[in-house]
Length: 231
Image 1 (cartoon, rainbow, N blue to C red):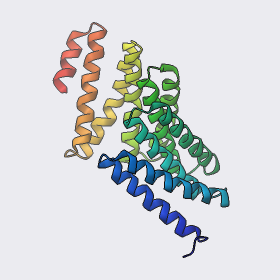
Image 2 (cartoon, one colour; image 1 turned 120 degrees about the vertical axis):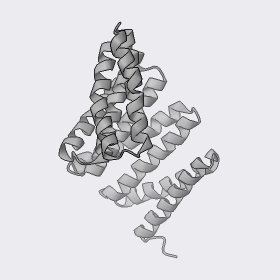
Image 3 (cartoon, rainbow, N blue to C red; image 1 turned 60 degrees about the horizontal axis):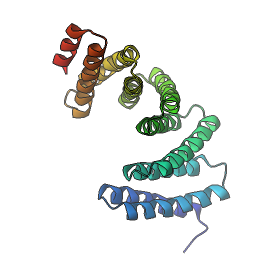
Image 4 (cartoon, one colour; image 1 turned 180 degrees about the vertical axis):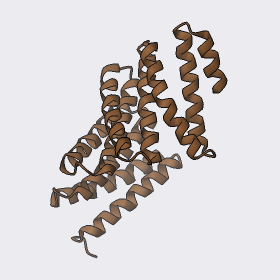
C-alpha cells in the first residue's frame, strides 16, 4: 500500500529474517534461504536509497551472517565464507562510522570469530589466527569498557578458547595451554555470577578438559589429573 515508506520495508525485511531463523530451526533450509534472500533484497534496496543509514547497514550485516550460518550448516563452505566476509565488511564500516557503538563492535567481533572457525574447519590456520586475534582484540576492549557485562565476558572467554583450539590444531600445546588458562577465570567468574546457568558450567568443564589435554601433551600428568578432576 505504501512501497516508498522505508520503515515498512525495514519491518518487512525483519519479518523475513525471523521466518528464516524459524525455518532454519525447523530443518527447512530451502525456505530459510528463500526468506533470508527476500529480506536481504529489501535491505539492500534500502541501503541504496539511504547509503549513510547505519540501521539499514546493520540489518544487512545480520542477514549476511544468518545466510552464512545456514550455508555452513549445509557444508556449503565457500558460500558461507563469502557471506561472512560480506557481513564483516559492513560491520567494519559501521565501526569506522560509529566507533563508540558497542553493539556494532560486538557484532564485528562475533563475525570475526565465526570466520576464524570456518577457516579452522577448512584446515587453513593463518586466516583463522588473524580473525581470532581481531575478535579477541575487540572482546578485550569491550570487556574493559563494560566489565559487568556477562555477554562481553562470555565473548572474551570464547575468544581465548578459540585461540586455544587453533593452537591445538597447530600442535603448539604451550600456547594452547596459555589461551585456555586465560579463558578459565572468566568462565569461572560467570559461573559464580549465575551458578544455575548450564552453558557457563559447560564452558568451565570444557576448558578444564582442554587444560588437561595440553598438560598431557607437555608431559605434565599431575597437572593433567588435577584439571581432569575439576572438569
